[in-house]
Amino acid sequence: MLITIDDVLSKDEVAQFRAWLEGAAWQDGAATGGSQARRVKHNLQLDDHAEPAIGLGQHILRSLAANPLFVSAALPRKIYPPKFNRYEGGGSYGTHVDSAVMQLPGSGQSLRSDLSATLFLAEPDEYEGGELQIETEFGVQEVKLEAGSLVLYPSSSLHRVTPVTSGARLASFFWIESLVGDDGERSMLFDLDQAIQRLTPALAEHQRELVKLTGIYHNLLRRWAIT
Ligand code: NI
Image (cartoon, rainbow, N blue to C red; front, side):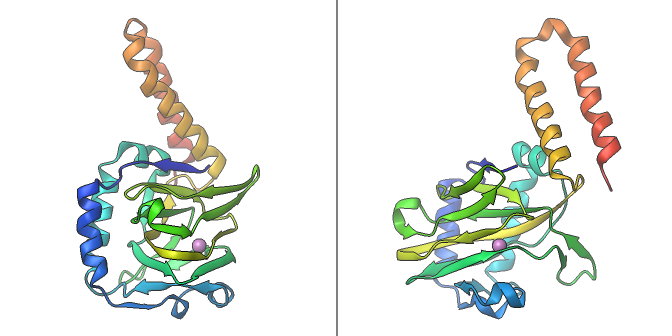
């Protein structure tokens, strides 16, 4: 499942983020990532353990917790503290796969990456290139969203960022361990939840059937969720 979620951050919030990010100290992104990924990674990243990354990351996590579409799609159990990257001057990230298990900073816990997320922080017309290309069973999907919008995609997929040939591409990225690790099961729950929510205002006279469908949603979640 590949899903885009618009307006995770408002344009005002994006402007605040941008002001913080412009003055930040960017580091070579190749310093992090697995050895295979490192060979193809040509970008800049913020120090995760310092401001502004910590504060901006917490802001994103609060926005996500209050976003019903994100919660419905991801069914998050754990979210990796958001990281920030910048591509410019031909910067790119070649085809790679994200690590399956990651250490959550400072917690001693691990996170299984079920979903990868990119939150765009630059408008598409501010830079050339920089498309996020995701290899799916239906072919390569190309994603380049408005600032403040987010894409969620299976961490199991091969993906890359094409070279940024002018301007700068700013984004936050992170991973989610879902209550439902299987992408197919999670997709069905999302579709069922969204359909019930759309039907509810139109079918007030069928309250009992709506409650039954809602019951089926929760019983499937009860069956599939690992808490
Ligand atoms: Ni990746």
